[in-house]
Image (tube, rainbow, N blue to C red; front, top):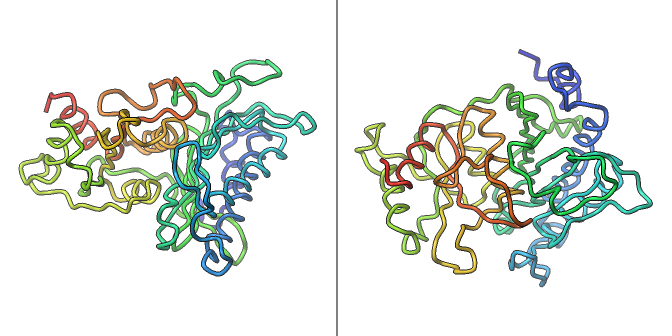
Length: 337
């Protein structure tokens, strides 16, 4: 096992022979993401002191109120990544359309999709929030980018992960060869290897779901959630309820300790019949991480990584976490439990 003094870039270079995506361009991309996250983490840590809590008064493409830190994180990522010389285009949860690299800046061969500040509704309450990212390689040699370049299966990702801004700042990511976690040491300004080769337990003890929406669920969804609350499940004892309401924070806890996170479709908003979470910038990258850690992720029927997006901001239900828990939830959602 490598020592805890190994930085992210050192770790990437050490494993370069095992990871064909770890080219100089890819390493630069990760470096720029890390630098952006450090800037965001700095502002998150002093948010209450610099008047960036609360709402901007604007509404994003999802129809949600934009929070000031959301806007700040989005601007930082776009500015840094456009100038990095490693991307041909990117997409953000906050922007309706593809964000292209201007003609006067160098371009690379990668596509970046990100949620700049997941869990932002919790900002004012000082709850852990995060940045989720997904990386694809451009599929052909065309000099221009189209929407189809982004509408890909999650199985085509070359890397994915998230930064978690909490009691400490962490980076958890995969390049398709396992999952590693790094914690930011503020004394040296580096993300150091703290959680090598993360493996999620095969089954957990925790279920995470917003039960306030029970009245909007169909019968299969109610039955699935009740299964985990029942002493008659395969553990023979009820799962404990743990729900933060920040996807990246709920996911991170379950990744380390085991469990299942569920965000099923509901009838609360007829405009969102397929659920709330975004396939490209939330479900797919976390599904890539969890599968590489030995877990699973479905939409209640199909494997998340097999889904091909039909639009940039497509939404999906999500059942993600420990493999046995997700498999059981999927069977129950299909009426096979």
